[in-house]
Image (tube, rainbow, N blue to C red):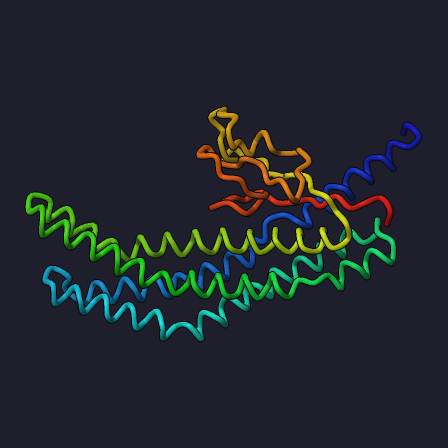
Length: 265
């Protein structure tokens, strides 16, 4: 064997392992989505068991779903808190995997990073999102019902759309779980990285055929962002409509941040 080849190969494997440590938190995402779909299915049951065709029926559905949104708040806090705790534990393990290349002072700084404010904000945001599942469904049914009243020729089609409300809410629940788990993970990496003086990170995509903007459009292409250094204070244009956000922080984004740590440590 060529001298040094084994060592370089081992280094590449170790680097890949370190990068993967910060990748998508699939287990937490799956568990969170399972919990949110319970709410979505109950929303569908409520709508199916009531008739929104009349103003009285519509008012009843909206009242029931509004009350349901308030009733589930304690449960929402528990579900969101569990997700955030799971992501937090994964983040700590990710830094541990990378700790071989860190000095003791850096490990201590990362362990003591002030993440409490961020985590409390994420908890409040997620409780609000969970409570939005029934209220958004109620607004959707209300809009469709009014459209059916005003457009009799589309009444049967609109009735089918109303019947799909549970399915639509399940899709929304899945999106919330996928997006919020990823945003929480990226936010924790940013908080700890900034605390030790990091100016940015390497954007990493999952590298499969579904990476965003695979049609070659350079605007907001996650394929083109992959491997680039991104400053924490300057999120890139990451969508075709010009939205700026960090890796993992956009709707359904599966990318992740690989932190770049100052050499001083």
